Image (cartoon, rainbow, N blue to C red):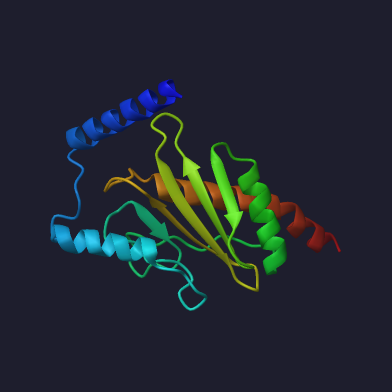
Length: 176
């Protein structure tokens, strides 16, 4: 138990040094108090169907299929034609990935936590599946300002994995 505490403390120290060395900072245009208040509001916000996914902050460490700006926008993920099949497909795909924990949050939403291997950073990914099976997605880093494109790469990797799983279904439909 002591070793775990020491490892966590060392990781936090290394993270602090890395962030300081890379010049990571909050949005320089936003006042510090306003940034903290906005972050607290985002964390405490409960999502509903009228607001499918939380909006991305101004920082470049988030992507969303519902974002209005190109900096944060990604296309929705392909689905399997209806909600239940898309949720099952998504759960199977996430279940194959390392360092991912996920849970269903209501009948149409999954919340996943991806943890990096070395520094143990956690990124939160929320999926909302429409009745027609289309999957809205938001992927955001918990820490830092930049993510070096990690969230966008994750969403595109998920897109490829889901598309590969859907290909046999498309081939079966054409053969019928």
